[in-house]
Image (tube, rainbow, N blue to C red; front, side, top):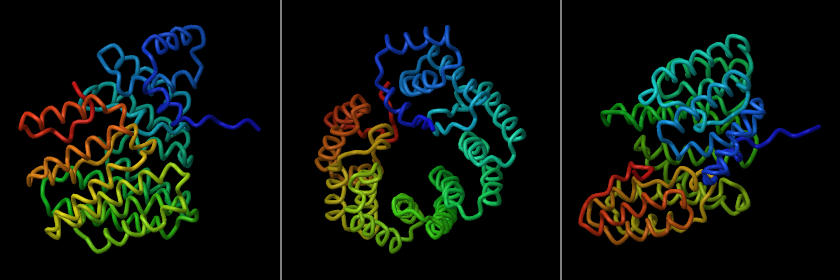
Length: 328
């Protein structure tokens, strides 16, 4: 039986595709418009390389893939930012709701539709995920996805009270997911989310416990994609816990360790966590932040230009915008 391609790997591998190679793939599609793998690769290339023309091309591929292959998981690569392209987002939403209507109990389609809708239509995404819990009540990732919705909402909360409340809701969902997860690697990944959201919920005891567990269990997963994620976020979380306890010395040590990881597919593509670095920079640890940035250069090669931009800002005595992900 022929195995399906690893669609997300196709995307990430194509991020640094040469422009002429991407153009050749577009030319290929003129003759073979049903070549799914080529369309997926182009989504990866257009993820960072966006101007008006490439944004239009990317949206065309997203719409085609939703209409023809809604079962393929492409995560963030297949999202359309509603604030940038509201008409395209609404068309994507229509296509996803049509796919769900045609396949109301298909777990893959419910997941993918929920992921697409999760930022702009959180309530609708939650409805799809909760439907998933009835279709697959013993599957952990529905609770994990529900936790992710609350996690994202907590990050964007406008008040501390709202942030803590949503983070605690996320933590409850992740803890439920952990009890359902049967694989050691899956549980290891959920524990990363628990550590990150526990510190956001100000449950510092659980955050530290989860982070320390990640460090102790990491040797069992050294050959997996989660190893770099776990080492990075465990140290970031322990650094944030140290900051909450007014121990900036320990926080600096953990920041240094977080920048010394070998990377991972996620860190290499989307970049590391800079919240702890921002906190330490705000209280004068300029050298520690520069050292952290230097460490991140080893694995976040796609973010080299934005890292250099931050270094130059610091050297000029300015405060970098650590929320920026791509240099303009």
